[in-house]
Image (cartoon, rainbow, N blue to C red; front, side, top):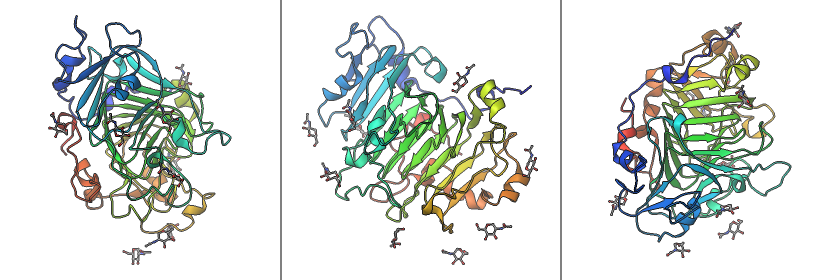
Length: 389
Ligand SMILES: *[C@@H]1O[C@H](CO)[C@@H](O)[C@H](O)[C@H]1NC(C)=O
Ligand SMILES: *[C@@H]1O[C@H](CO)[C@@H](O)[C@H](O)[C@H]1NC(C)=O
Ligand SMILES: *[C@@H]1O[C@H](CO)[C@@H](O)[C@H](O)[C@H]1NC(C)=O
Ligand SMILES: *[C@@H]1O[C@H](CO)[C@@H](O)[C@H](O)[C@H]1NC(C)=O
Ligand SMILES: *[C@@H]1O[C@H](CO)[C@@H](O)[C@H](O)[C@H]1NC(C)=O
Ligand SMILES: *[C@@H]1O[C@H](CO)[C@@H](O)[C@H](O)[C@H]1NC(C)=O
Ligand SMILES: *[C@@H]1O[C@H](CO)[C@@H](O)[C@H](O)[C@H]1NC(C)=O
Ligand SMILES: *[C@@H]1O[C@H](CO)[C@@H](O)[C@H](O)[C@H]1NC(C)=O
Ligand SMILES: *[C@@H]1O[C@H](CO)[C@@H](O)[C@H](O)[C@H]1NC(C)=O
C-alpha cells in the first residue's frame, strides 16, 4: 500500500499576505467593495455584472490604463487573449485567497494540436499573453518560429489570482494542449490551477512566468518553451508519465538570457493513489528539446514516480545529438522517495548541483531579465508572494 502524503504538508515557506486583493476578492453585497479603481466585473450568469465573458472585459479596455478584473464564481468556456502592454490583474472571487483548492472560477477550453490539426500549438491555449499571434508561435527546428526582432513587448505586468485554467481536450497526452501561453510578456500566477496532459505551460521567447502556491497538472512535456519560468511552492501534479516533466529549448539568440525552467520548494507528486501505483519509477524530470535545454529543480520533494536516473536523454531528437556544456538538466537538494542518488549517478544524465553551481539560479532575482538584458527584473512579481532565500 502506498502512502499518499498530502501535498500541503510538504510545502515549505510561508503563506503570503495577499491582503492587497483579498478585500476585493471576498464575496460582499456589492462585489466591487474593496476593489482597486478601474475594476471590471465579470459573471458567467450575467448577474450584477457588465460582462458575461472575461474576454469581453479584456476587449473593452483601452491600451494604457491599469485594469483589474474581478470574476465571480462559475465556469467560463472561452479562450483568453491578452495583447495589451499595460498592466492587468485578474482576480477570482473567493473567501480563501490562500487556497488554490478552493478556487471557484475555472476557465475551460478543449483543444489539442493532434494529427496536424493546426499549423501551430499556439491555437490550442486556454490563455495566451503575447503582443500578437506571431510572438506566441512555437514553430519548429533548433530555434523555433523566428519572431521578428521588432515585435513589441506585450503585457509588462499580468497577474492572475485564484483562477483555474483547464484544457480538457482529452484525459491523456494526445498532442500539444496548452493551458497557458506566455511570450514577450511578464505573467504571474498566484494560487491558480493550470492543467491539461501535454505541453500544458508554454513560456515562449522573451516570456517570463512566475507560479506561486499554484497547481500545475500534466503528463507529457508539460512545461515547455524558450523563455524563463519559476515555479515556487507549488504542486507539480503527475497525471501520468510521458516524455519528461520539462522539455526546454534554448537558442543562441536567447543564450545571454537566463532562460530556463526552475522548480523551487515544490512538490512533484502523482495525481492520486491509482495513478501513483501505476507510474512508480517511470516519470522523467525532463528531457532536452534541444542541446541548450536548461532546467533546475531546487529543494523539491519528488514522489516515487520519478525514475532513478532523474532526467532522460531524448535519443530520437536530432536537436540533442550533441550534448555540450550548455545542456543543463540539474537538481539541487532533491528529496523524497523519487530522489535516488545511486540511480542518478549510474544514469549519468542528471547533474547534481552543489551550492556553488546553484548560485546563479538560486532565486527569481537571479534568472529573470528585462528585454534590454537588465537584471534582476522582478517588478512584475507580487512582492507579498516572493520567497526571499
Ligand atoms: C490598442 O493597440 C492595438 C495595437 O497597437 C491597436 O490595434 C488597437 O486599436 C488599440 N486599441 C485601442 C482601444 O486603442
Ligand atoms: C500602473 O502599473 C504600473 C506597473 O505596475 C505602475 O508602475 C503604475 O504606478 C500604475 N499606475 C497607476 C496609475 O496605478
Ligand atoms: C486567441 O488567439 C487564438 C490564436 O490566434 C485564436 O485562435 C483565438 O480565436 C483567440 N481567441 C480570442 C478569444 O480572441
Ligand atoms: C507572421 O509571420 C508570418 C510568417 O513569417 C508572416 O508571413 C506574417 O506576415 C506575420 N504576421 C504579422 C502580422 O507580422
Ligand atoms: C486520478 O487522476 C487521473 C489523472 O488525472 C484521473 O484520470 C483519474 O480520474 C483520477 N482518479 C481518481 C479516483 O480520482
Ligand atoms: C546558432 O545556432 C545555429 C543552430 O544550432 C547554428 O547554426 C549557428 O552557427 C549558431 N550561431 C552562433 C553565433 O553560435
Ligand atoms: C566545456 O567545458 C570544459 C571545461 O570547462 C571546457 O574545457 C570545454 O572547452 C567546454 N566545451 C565547449 C564545447 O564549450
Ligand atoms: C535506485 O537506483 C538504483 C540504480 O539504478 C537501483 O538499483 C535501485 O533499485 C533504485 N532504488 C529505488 C528505491 O528505486
Ligand atoms: C557520462 O556522460 C558524459 C557525456 O555526457 C561522458 O563524457 C562520460 O563518459 C559519461 N560517463 C560515464 C561513466 O558513462
